[in-house]
Image 1 (tube, rainbow, N blue to C red):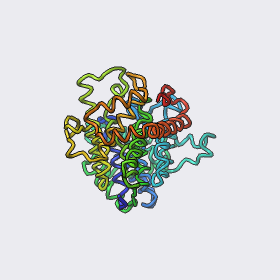
Image 2 (image 1 turned 90 degrees about the horizontal axis):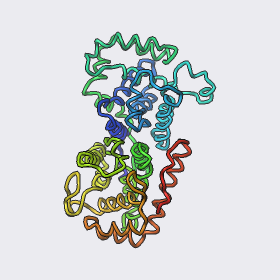
Image 3 (image 1 turned 180 degrees about the vertical axis):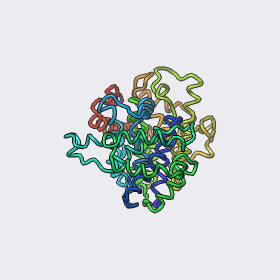
Image 4 (image 1 turned 90 degrees about the vertical axis):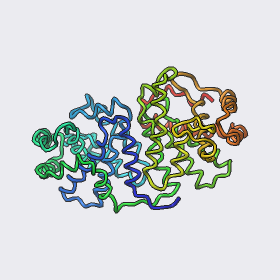
Length: 428
């Protein structure tokens, strides 16, 4: 699958996925990316440096992975403590840091709520807060002041006054000066609120393409898995378990090394659409009612549409999004049957069910390995050959799953000391 894929395609897809958490504040990332770009451009930074700021703007709230946290940061002055204000920036840095093309953006995001008058604090002296972090902070606060229900030009005076009052305290003075130079230009405000905004950002980023292969794709798939799974203690390691199980099965069923890696990426991204599902449903301690189940069904549809927006990932898209389709055509979201479901999609279906049964859930304890195998074998809408392969290699695949989940769980504990310890990854 080696090909040139514009990095902006991947990042905008992830940015749009994050917007699913709260559609009422959608496009915030795109607006902040554009405002950041405009301020940095006004300050005289070269385009090749600004690209990292644009990428940071598009993903800056990826660490705000639950609805409460994501909603609270839309208050102009939020956070009652240092931790409240900075935790999602730190999480965002952790989520993005392993992707080579996003490492600089990750550092910008890490510090994007540091106040200008805090940089002399001993906490930051050794950190060397990037200048772009201050620009991103300013752009972010500008956007939260915009009322989408009011005409934009009439809001300039209020926004300008609010930002100017924070100069030298909350905000870098040079960045505020640059913003004040933009205030009188109507196009700047029209661009921010325009339906053409995404196209404009794509044009800005068009010179920057990344050579994507199956190994590099896993870096971005890991970002997706962290954004998805860090929302709930019950899903914190689910995607990595599915990915590990699915790639192990794919290898044993004769997939090439490239397609096995693509399967791993599909497993990491298969629940991307669950960002649209409220945490109250994900963590419900009991069966879902019909209304809740109907909402849950939407997650595979969104997974399909998000990955479909990245040309070149059609195989990964189908494997990831079809994991709740059934051989008899009674699955969702497309109602596909055995004639339309290739082996990769069938592998991911089995892997998702196997991993889910092995995990603690709000409504039940993890199932034993014996009960898991018995239940999976009895489901006629799962592929026979894939089930047979799982049966023949159950101990090995289960250990691969368990070890992969344990590594992620331990990493979460190291990065986030208060990470919930209720997960029981040793159940099987």
